[in-house]
Image 1: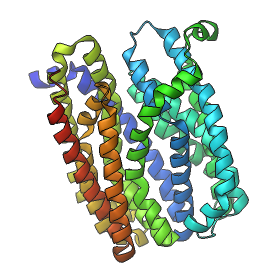
Image 2: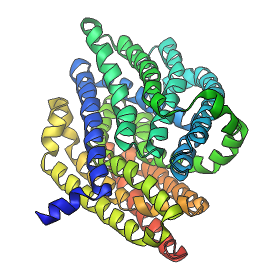
Image 3: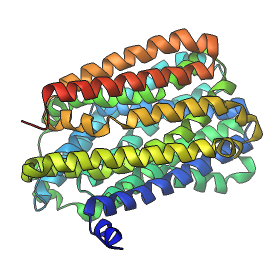
Image 4: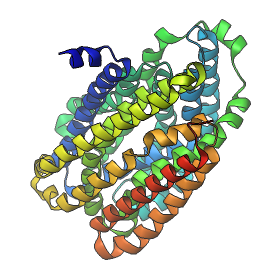
Length: 426
């Protein structure tokens, strides 16, 4: 009983618990949308939708050039009463992202014929693919608002905005057009509209945490300054995203849309563990930043507590998911059960990835991002080589093995560099 009371008084554990609940809500909603897609559409059509989701997420990430990482780092480092500075930072970030999103939308439209041929195997209408380019700005708006809330230590709200809002919007539109949803091209367009809707709704989540625009404008940095400050952080996001999704891209490149659907479902299920990791990320990172800047004598204790928490939670989640792997795949349709071995490999891969989370944070906090960038780029190269060698020969299981090899390499290398640079001792 005393141990329970002590746990309930620990702000890290309590906040992590609510973050995990919020993350799991988002997972449940996203899984519901994915299950509707796999049940209502054939495997090839489902593969088209999943590949489009991947492209929207990836291209919007590139267009943000690290702004989301800068926001969470800068906001979490500011004292709680500096509302004007936080608001000014967010508003200037909006201005920069409008410009970059517009540029990448034009690139999207221009590259659409090649993207359609190379990754969608001509199973998506070219105009619908081009129309999806408008989602980039709204996806960036959604993500930026989520990271702003994360920096404010509103981890549950951050998680719900980033994961639940897009799923809720898509499910709402699917319900509204239920009788016509089996038209593959309508499903594509509804996804695009859902991102626009989610981006607009995300603004209402941050409004209560903003000061007046007039006061914020005085404290606001210029968009150019944000660009310069965010650029060194961009490779972290790029490499992390590519290591999560390069396998799906390679499956789309080498194989057909049916295999994309199979691998995507297995990957989505394995990412359940990463959703738990994301909840811990949203809780731990701002507090680790705050501890480093304002209570450094407790940094080492907090770091190792956080590391133990991450490994324990992810180990339990991984073991539980291994037990129910068959039934998780069956929920998407009996044809998806054939991806069970792929899912098992991916679950171990995600666990190894999770073990380096807190170590990675310290590279950012200590402003030694260049080392982390080098490791991430090296891991990405390993991932690409493994995919090129294994996917054509072993199919989707080859893609999963590539992820496992890469994540083991990544975690071991990050920990070695962490110890070499003694990031907790300086």
